[in-house]
Each structure stands twice: as C-alpha cells, then as structure tokens.
Image (cartoon, rainbow, N blue to C red; front, side, top):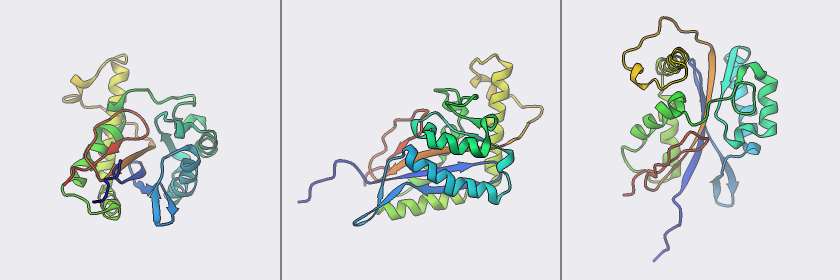
Length: 222
C-alpha cells in the first residue's frame, strides 16, 4: 500500500489578455531531478515572465506604447524589480496597480475580468472529464486558452468599461441591478492588458475565490 500524498499535484499558470490577443498560458515551473516541478509565484519569477514573454508579445503586436497594464495588488505584482520593469515600458500613467498613482480597487472581483469571467469559463471547460496527469492538464489548459476568440476578449473588456462607466455615474455605489438592462452610449476602448495567475490541481475543487493573485482550482476526484 502506497501512502497518499498530502496535497494533489497542481500547475501554476499565468495569462494576460487585451481585446486583440491573449498572452499565454505560461506555467511557473522549475526543473527538478524527475522533470518540471510546479513552483509558487513570487516577484523573482514574475519579473522575467513579463520581461521575456509579455513585453515581446506586445512588441510583436506593436501596441506597447498604447497599452494600459492592469493587475491587482498581490505581493509578486509589486516587487521592486516588477515595478521597475513596468514603469520602464508603460510609465506611471499607463499602469493600474497597487504602489502606482492609479491603484486597482481592493476586494472588487466584479470589476476584474479574470475573476468575473475567465475562472468560471475555464472551470466549465476543463472539468468535463478527469485528468490522467499534469501533462494532460497543461495541454487542456493551453487548448482552451487558445480557443478564446478576439470577439470574446473584446466583449469581456467592453463589459469592464461598462462597469467603470456605471460606477462613475452612480458615485461608486453598487451597480449589479443596473447591469442587466443598461447599455452604454459609447466606449472609449484603450488597449489594456489584464494580468492574472491561477493554480490548477488534480484533486477536489476547493472554492477559495477571492480578489488576489492566486486562485486554486482542483478537479473532482475519480
């Protein structure tokens, strides 16, 4: 009889998206004796991901100078090397994040498209059937991320703009009761990058959803 592991296997994945494209998924891993090993996200690992993956992708799409970079205030997001890199490429006036002049509002997941849309979408499509191993899990994540169309991305970002407009018009009060019927007269669609990370595992789903950097998904046991 083999002892059961204390924790299920998991992968940590990062994506960033605009109305035009989705960057990623990128998996946080280190090479161990038996192959890739999932690692936690910290500023030391987050900065090279932005520098080597996100920035080149934006440069390839010729949109670095017109992009607003948006992220929540998790500690890896505001590490000193990360802030220096973001400031270099976007400047203070095109960054929405903690420790910058324009901070992302705390504890407001309804304004975060990663929270109000993406996690639910991925849960619906990922957990239709069990995974045999982490390789299959990563392949399925990659497939479904790549299946997201630009039409979907634009619709999601337009919804964010709609929420911002409603909040401004209602002095910062709750807006849920307006969202079903309210339609904006116009959208000012700046190019924005919404950055996010999540953890997917092979065990049972543990629902600890909150507005922060990491969110854990655990597929149902067989």
